[in-house]
Amino acid sequence: MNANDTIREQLQSLAAELQHRLERISAHERHEEGPPSQDFAEQATERENDDVIGALAVDTRHQLGLVRKALERLDAGEYGLCVECGEPIAPARLAALPWAQLCVKCAAQREKR
Image 1 (cartoon, rainbow, N blue to C red):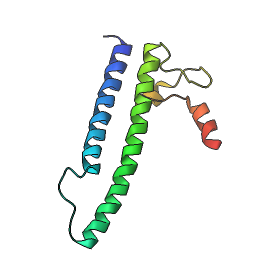
Image 2: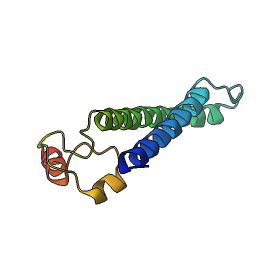
Image 3: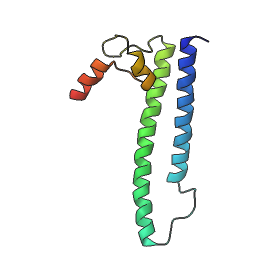
């Protein structure tokens, strides 16, 4: 098994985990865990929870998209290269964020914008 196979396995595992998380979130959003409460205070809490769950769904979909893009870059032979400047992304950054698209320098510049 070469390094790309290991990276691919890691990214595919992460994608599967994120997909599973989305399925659980979707089930919660459809209230498959049971009927809504009859208590007004509990309903207010459930609505707040729904807002949090909705935000989690958005974040999870975004992260899943980044992981899928990383897999596409791996297939294209471009994984580990910054999509802005083309320079290699530091191995420590890829270890922490295997879906990273930008090197530290370009990420910092983008943050300033």
